Image 1 (cartoon, rainbow, N blue to C red):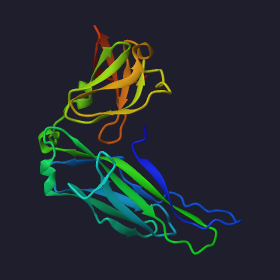
Image 2 (image 1 turned 45 degrees about the vertical axis):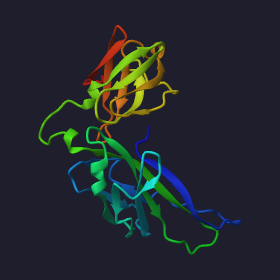
Image 3 (image 1 turned 90 degrees about the horizontal axis):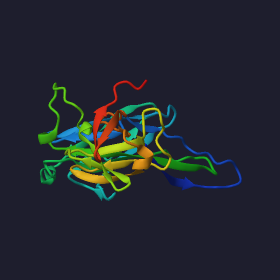
Image 4 (image 1 turned 60 degrees about the vertical axis):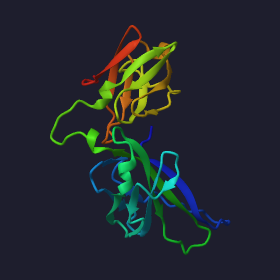
Length: 251
């Protein structure tokens, strides 16, 4: 699964007989997911204009889990800013008092959106587009945030699989969202083309979408960590229950 989704929006279309010019992605974000730790006032993200000739506007906002634009419990500051050619800047996600109303024993999910707006073209028969980046924004309460300086095993290793008829069910006992992007029967086999990445909510179960026949008794799952990395877990199944261990050697 792509962690950073881009959407295209047509801003201005003056289509004629001449060649249509399309702008390339200009405004980039420094990460593929955002973690807002409870107790912090804000989190800062770096953005940059990769276009060396043209200035762009960068517009940011937050959506809830249903994809609806919201103005709390976090806001983006500034909501719109100008980026000069080749310049970098920062966007701040500011926490509001409503954060205290969210569940404090597990993560909550939102989405951070960043849309680039190109300058208006003075050329005829030009198509201008705006590219939008949408990444997951997790609110992680202080009570479940990992302590700095302590080395803890990744919580994803607590995942288990259970056989439900001829299919596997993923069990997430942790207070964190866990995104699975690949599933395979072993370390050398690619993920089946019909596997659809899933995000398992905290303390919940979800159908993996593949049969036990396809994955066998030692399935390998790939998850996405806080930094966009893709560690793997190999499962060992006994009596219908599968437990995970990290893959340290992929040779």
